[in-house]
Structure formats: structure tokens, C-alpha cells
Image 1 (cartoon, rainbow over the protein chains, first blue to last red):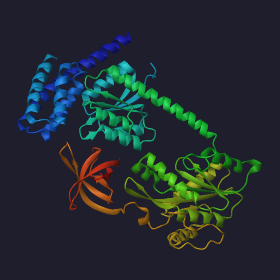
Image 2: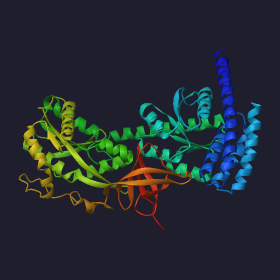
Image 3: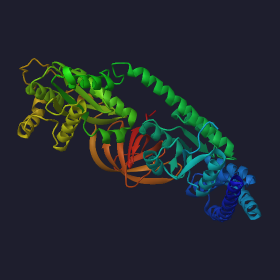
Image 4: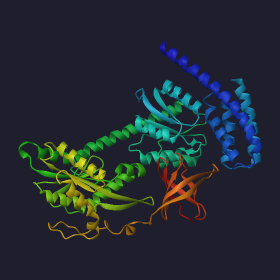
Amino acid sequence: MADARTQAAFEERHRQLKQKFAERTLNDAARLEDLLTEFTQSDSESGEEIRQIAHRIAGGAGIFGLDRLTEPSALVEDLIIDKRAAETVRTKTEALIAHMRREAETV
Amino acid sequence: MTIPDGKRVAIVDDDPLFLEHIEAALLREGGLRVVKLNDSKSLFDALQNQSISCVVLDQNLGAESGLAIGQALREQVANPPPIIMLTGAGSERTAVKAFRIGFSDYVPKRNLQNRELIGAIRSAISRAEQDQAARERTKKLLEGERHDSLTGFYADHYIRARLEEMTSGRHASPFALIAVRIKDSRTIHARIGHRASEMLFRDLAAHAAKLDIRGGYWGHLGTDTLVSVLEDDPGEDDVADACRLMASKLKFTVSHDGLSIDCEAIVGASLFPQDGHTADAVIDTALAESDRAATLEARWATSFLDPGTEAVANSQLDDSLAVPTPDRRGMDLSPPDGIDRRRSDRRRDQRYRVLRRGRAIVDGLHSVIDCTVRNLSESGAQLRFASYFVPPDRFKLEIVGAGEPRWVLVRWQVGNDVGVQYEEQG
């Protein structure tokens, strides 16, 4: 009985955290859009911030049930680490933003 | 479950939502309590104040690198808990580096499975416990040994047993105890870490072994104290001479990662039975005398000389260093090899005490962080940052007005102070 209550409390907490993660993902999508307006190369301040956001999403999406965000965010992170061409990063980041909005709104 | 409930695991990550989730999942699914931390400073504080069985470190902590923190932890914390690296960018190279530094395991953060992380934590703790048990067994075996493996002198338990014998009952016999420690040893320990401090202590013992203390033998007491025991009722003059000899000769400079560290011994002496009727009382008095010497900015102190005589004797120490006086009791006052040569001969690189402006240029972050260059040599420098900052393993250092920036490797960090070594060129 006590175990069932603990399980219920754990699930409720997880649901709240997932909700917060979805809200933050929407904010992150807006921030990524802003960053893209000034983004010209991977090796730059805006590139580093894009990488940080992508890293955070790649690490958190799986545990909060937004698995479909893991791959596109990991891709953006890796492209910037590999200092790939700005246009490639831009295209993949735009795709990621669209994914983020779609997934977060389903939560 | 192999691990009892309530093991405490420190998780270091800069994402508060991730930390919240892991805290709940590890408790629920692994019976593990989580200490949530977001940077290296809070990790070092937690390791000092709590019992932590395992550390899970995110490789990417914004301005900090998990690899650098893990390395600092292993160098500066005695008996550190196992460390697991958590990373989003799971490159093979990072994993290899992590294992080389001594991380216990490596778990990809992308698509992280709670069970995988819990399994890695459990087996890391279990391996660390097995290692600890093996160390305990070795320690037990060594307890039968008379000699200490670090210094080669009599071991702590042997010295204590001998002092007990000499202070008890019918076998009681007057003796003197001289305690020798490295001045400011705690500060030095904090600066260069545990392993390097042990090497320094070993150097002290090697220098001490070369001194000819008539009727005396050496032992290693506790972690940072050498003791010399003079048996058979030595005269106060003999004890004072031995203290003066130690204070003048146990002074040396060692090089640690390109930086020079000046070490000098602080000496304190006590007598049995004058200073107490138990071994502990005599030990405590000798240690208190060495503390008193440090407080008075002197090199040695005894429980039996009057302070005026001590002050004069201490003030003559530097003279006795430069011109050894003839020894009326046959003690060998010739300079032990390497101890009192001029310091510049001993150093690999001449060190300059400087205060110059420097800039750490951190690749990838595109940031330039100002610092003060405090010590500088051909091979490295000591930097002080205005606020706490963990640099990456390698960055460019520009010393203002001294030419082009050069690549440096971080060798140690204590608080805001960072020791760096210039990278070999070419």
C-alpha cells in the first residue's frame, strides 16, 4: 500500500518535471531562433550557446519522454563540435526548433 | 540489492530539471540518496562535509569540464570515491581520456536509462569497496612490519609501542622526543594535493635520514610527523643541539610540475618524565612545542629551555646554515648531500616571484579571463583568478607585455589558484 503511494508520488513528480521540461523546451526553441539570426559560424559565441542548448535537450529529452528530440538535438551538438559549415548547422537547427515545438506542445 | 539503502551519490550537472529527475529515480529505483550539485566548488565542499560513495559528473558543465574536475578530485582528495562520467557528446576519445584519468565508468547521457546509470553506480561502489577491503588487508599485513613503507623509518605502531614501554612501570626510562613537521604542511597539501604531499614528506624523511643524531632513531607518527627518539636519558644540551641541527639542515626546495616549493622543518622537543607520565603526554608536548615554534616564527622550540635562550639559538640558525660550526660532540654537521646548496642550484628552473597581469584565453568558449601571474618560471606559472573558475585542461595564457600567448596545461587547482605548465613546443 505504502509502496503504491510512493509510486504514485514518484509518477506525479515525474509528470510535473516533464511539464517543466516541455515549457523550457518551448523557451529554448525561441532562444535558438534568436541565436540563428546572428549565427554565422560554428566557432562563435552564438554557436557555443546553440551547442549548450542542444546538449541540454539531448541529455534530458529521453528521460522526460520526448525521445524524438534526442537525435536531432544530438546532431546539432555534434555538428557544432565538429565545426561544420554554418549553413548545415542552420538547416539542422531550424529542423530541431520545429521538432521541439511539435513535441513540447503534445505534453 | 548489493548496496544497502542510503548510499549517498553526488550528481554534478548544471541542468536543475535533470538533477530533480535523477534524484527521484535513483532513490525510487536504486535506493540511493542523491546530493544534487551544479559545479566543482559545491562538489569539493560536499566531499569535505559528507560521506559520498560515488560521484557522477557531467562532462559538459558550461564553463567547467568534467574531465578536469575528475582529475583535480583524484589528485587532491585522499581516497576519493569512484567517479562516473556522464556525457552527451559520447566520443570515444573522451571515454579513453576518462579511463586514463581514473574514472570508474562512462555512461552516455543521451537516451539515458535509469537502470543503466544505477547499475554503473552500484558496480563502481562495489568495486571501490572491494579495493578498500584489499587495502585494509594489506594494511593489516603491514601492521606486523616494524618499518613504514613511505619513509623507511619505524612505523607509527612500533614507535608508540616503544614509547609505551619506556613510560610504563619498571621499564620506565628517561628519553627525549623530537617532533619534526614541514612548516605550513596543510597549506602545501591543499596546494599540491595528496600524492605530491606524500612525496614531499618522503623527501623530508630522506633528508632526515642523513642527519647523524647521536643515540637517536627515527619514526613516522600519524600522517605528517617524523619523530626522533633519544633514549638513555640524553642531556638537555644534546637534545637542543639535535633540534638545532634538524632545524638548520631540514630545509630544502622541491620542484612540483615546474613550480618550486620551499620546505622547512618545524621542530619541537619534549622530555620524559618531565613532560608527562604517558607516551601520549610526551608526544602531545613535542607537537605543542613545534606549534609554538611556528607561532613564534622560530624553527624549533623545547619544553625545557627558557624562551630567551631559544630565541637567540633560533636567530643563529641562518648563520649556522652558511658556516657550519665545529661540532663539539662529534655530530656530523657537514651538509647532507643537496640540502643546503644554494637554491638556484637545486631548481630545475629559476622561479621568479612576480605579480603581472595575465589572460586565460579559453578555446571554444571564446572567453578571455583575467588573472594575476604570481610565480613564473621557464616551465610554468601560478595564476590567481579573481573569482572561482575551473579552466579546461589546456588553454592559452597571455602574460601582458610578454609576447604571444602560449598553450599551457593545467597541473593543479586550489580555490582561485591554478598551476599551469607550458606545453612543449614543436
